[in-house]
Image (cartoon, rainbow, N blue to C red; front, top):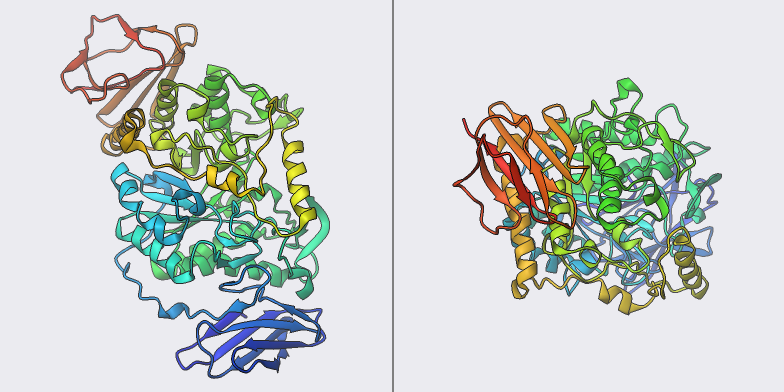
Length: 604
């Protein structure tokens, strides 16, 4: 049965809730005259009731065994927060205007990750709409929204959500979220939603009052694991499969980013991720729209994207941390924590050629072998980044790359990202060198929980050498400090960085060799004592040759084995794209400024 409160055009609302442990279940409806109505138990331990003369906006609780008033586990909206009553929502009342939108895949995606609360000063769904034209003008084709499921308080990263079906009331109403999605589609921007199927937040989590949603069979960093393979797990699995389809159907979401799938424990014959992907593919087949299912995984395991026939989960793509770690450690010099495994130009070269740096080899940080080989898998199956919410926000002070390296180095890192054959993800503000940090913030109500979070943050950084007072996650100041400034129009340096990103995105889209998603049609060399990296990419008759000076000093590129006439089309030290400069056949040396990038296109 489909969970939640489903209202029809005649004002009849069907309430359905799964609770195998309850001896009786009642529906408490708030209004001028509070009603408390007994529910009926039907197949598979669902309690159900059809109520007439209800309206969208009416609020309700379920009462378990006469003494526990609880929100709906599949609440569609929590207007008063995680502890308040659920609200009846009519999903059919929204007038969609995106009929011509056919969905999207990763193949041509330029993804922009954002957090609704800090993306704008107001931090709402509707205020985010005001920035969409700027993203479209930049060349963004998809936004990835950090989790919006209802969380405690008014500020949170979203990974403490406890109502997977309800968009957070701090950001706006369900219709306002739909408005944001529709406005994206009208600008040819896809919407990917970050969803959390590996844990629930600790505050406002009443699921155990209803049934065995959790198991102590496995341990996670966040407490009890979700019950995907023990007794009563069929209905738990249906709850999450239904949630995935709910966002795609009711909100016209184009893709899901599944958080930390390595913390999903399921030893069923059919893994929960496989079942989610099968249902999503069936939906795509039935309505003809394209959709994505993206996995975040630190396993370096191709099983995540392998097809079912190869015993895989069949996700359409996965995040690849190795590119980030290789580039970050090389360009910043950081070697603490997991960066201890990286740091050389050879690591960066391998990340581009083979995707996984650790592809079955020994990891000193993990003190074991890690990963398997992804060399022969198309790069459109992998999403890479120089920054994201984790890699910025899980630093002690939330510093962005713009706070750690020079503008020239920042542009170099962006060039390696955007000129690779992989799917690039840009973290909000990265495209203009935003200097505001992105720090970890919450607003819990339980003093013991607040203290636990504060202490946990300190312990988390034990393997790093960061010194200083860690920003208080509970403080509103930490949240406000993390908001984007959007000040690139008043800052010449930021304006140049944004123009740099926009130009490279345009080149990526319009030059066949750069638009081509292939590792085999690519040749990478590290030369001049690995201070310079060159990448040659081709697609049919289109061919580009790119030179990256990897160091903070002038360098020389010594031409070797590059035949033909090459037209310079981009130089990071020159704000204008060049059309009349060539690398002639007899030109043996090219002087490179520090952290500079030069792109040549071969002439016919």
